[in-house]
Length: 588
Image (cartoon, rainbow, N blue to C red; front, side, top):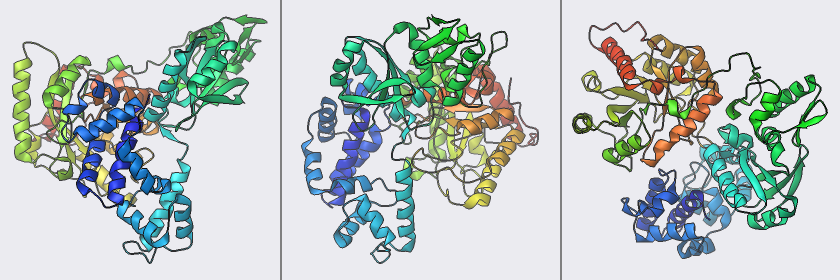
């Protein structure tokens, strides 16, 4: 069964193909807009099956037909025609940033380029500089983009890797003779980028041929003594095979942890005169039953190490010592950074509120884009005041029934000098202010550092959103002095964001650990642009756990009353006559 990724890829290819051939520009825009809209739905298949996709603006019968065909595994005639007319290498080259369809058409028409290899050769031969619309700077950007594409060719974002392994697991579990199959490796540990997509399974020996046929797989090389199968597809998944249910815990641990963690646990077994390997744990010359990983840790007098913490430098915790209490999804009481159809979201305020209520959230912050972000439907001061009134009315009507409380907010652009794009009297009417950079990423280290320090010092700023601005495997993080900025946040008492959109995961785990050291609160945001995307909070919890964060480190783990008190204290400091030099308490 086809995946969300394949649907989005088909829409993107159709949009690009029409633009490249310079035909039906309205059709190209329609497919591009549909691609951008449907990207905001994490579970696109569920939304399609429920009829929700058909109700979205800009999704007409032609686009629905493509989506349905891809999900059903049927040919898409519109895409097949374009793929007959456009070389496969041109479709691949469209992923290079800054090289749109028009420039690629020039490259094909004037230099005969039809593949990335030919483009790289032309760059090395200095052939792009004389082309119309290019020049030396563009050629240098293409060279850098080609190098970056090579480096990330085998890498996947965490969400992409999990989608790939879960699709394989669904088919694998349906094969008779497969007793258990689970995520393993980096996708299970929650690394933001996954190089090796891995699963662990217990399979009867005589069921292996059926597994190979069901998955279109082939035998793979042994992995540290574990026989493997490798599935075909855009994202190959390696499956480590075990044959005994009562040793699955050892196999799963072996295939999940980073090498340093696995070696540390194995060394613990050695200290007790035993051995640990992928085929089981042996102590006192007998095999210890360990159907679960916890059984391995228990036999070695250890607290289980959560998968997210099975990394180099994270110590094992002997029983008798207190194990750190890591954040759990149920600790999150709300989410502060979300969008509706009032800016660039695809769900209404009521739909977002209903989804938050269904997810068990006590509060939901609505923080549309601000007036500088006109491209994203940013709100001017009048529209923002109108939304504040709408939220107040919604809360009033829901007060008797209980459920999720909506907080008024804004995602205000941090301007070049670090100031926000609303006057103080507008900001004073909001429950929460999130400040984010959305443009001018190339100010240089000194310029961007000054910008971020100024934002941190602004008394109206409650949270600084997606601070480095990176897009995983897309746009690199902005260059600035992160430690100086974190110190400035600690001085002012503002919180920092862990944007849980899997394309961002910003701040990263290393910076989050640095924030924890400084006593900073972290706001884990879904940055949801659809009701479905509130599920991004799950990725935020994974990254927070990798950073060692617990509930006390997280702003939106506070109950609503405590959050309101924290925000009120900040408002008192920001108001005229307030004390702006004393940081608000970061924990309560």
